[in-house]
Image 1 (tube, helix red, strand yellow):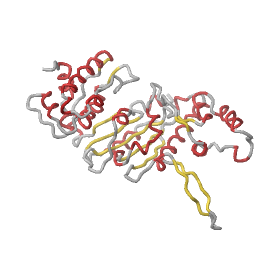
Image 2 (cartoon, rainbow, N blue to C red; image 1 turned 120 degrees about the vertical axis):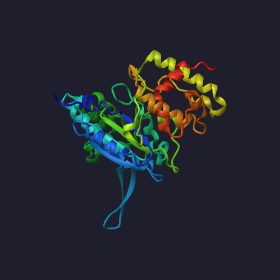
Image 3 (cartoon, rainbow, N blue to C red; image 1 turned 90 degrees about the vertical axis):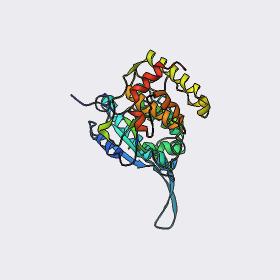
Image 4 (tube, rainbow, N blue to C red; image 1 turned 180 degrees about the vertical axis):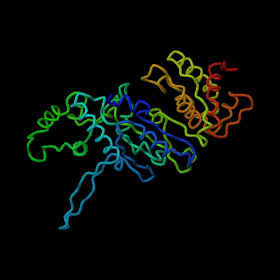
Length: 342
C-alpha cells in the first residue's frame, strides 16, 4: 500500500513545540519523529537567536558584487520560504498525478524557538498558522511581486516574464492559474497558504533566562509536548474529552481562574476559549490538556505564584517544576471538574 501524508505523518501535528529542561534530548526526539515518517520527509532546519529576523525566515534582498565592480541585488529565500516552496512543489507533483494525499512531507525544524522574537520573525506568516481540519491554512497571506517571484523560483517554476513572454500581469496570472489549478490556484493571485504536507516543529528550553516572550495567540496555534528529564517517569495523561465534557471543563476552569483574579495579572486575557484545543477534532486529547493547557497555566497564568494550583491539588502538593504539575494531570482534571468555588 502506498504511504500517504495522512497515513505516515498523522502522528506529527502540523505545528508542534517540544519543551523541557536543557539536555533532555528534544532535538534528538525531533530527529526520531522525522525518521519515523514514510516516505522520508524533506527537512529544513534553522535556529532562532536574538539577531534572527523576518528576512532570515522569509527572505531578503542582498547586494551581489560583480567581477567588474558593479553591484546588483538578488533576493535570497529564507528558511521558511525554502520549506514552503518544497512542500508546495511536492504537493503540486502529487496533485498532477491525481494523488495529492501522497505528497511527500516537508518538516521545518526551528530549534530554540523562544530565543528569537517570534512575533517579529513570523510577521505576516503568523496568519498562516491557523489550520483547517484538512491541514491547509484557514487564511492566506499576500506576497509582494519580489517574494512571489522568489517562491516560484524556489519551486523550480521559472517565470516566463523574464523572457518577455508576458505583456501584462494579467497574462502571467492566467498562465499560472492554468499551471496551479485546483488547491494551488491561490499562487496565481500572489498568495500563499501552508499545505497539509508542511509541518513546523520547534524546540525550546523552559529554563533559559535570555528568552523572548511568546504571546498567548502565538502559543495557541501550536501543539505542545513536554520532554521530562526522566522520560521513563512520564505519567499517563487524563482521558480524552468529548466536546460537551470539554466545554463544561472550560467553564469550571475559567471560574477557578476568575476566583483568583487578585493573583492573576489581567485575568480576562488569561481565560481559556473552547477552541484553545481541538478546534477541528471530535475529541479533545488528554495529552493536549496535560501539555498545552497545563503548560499555559504554568507559564502564562500562574507565572509568579503557584500557590492556587497547589491549593487546588491539595494533599500538601508542592510544585517546583512543571514536571511536578504535569505528573498530576489526572488529579488536576478531577479537581477542576469537582471545583465548586469553596
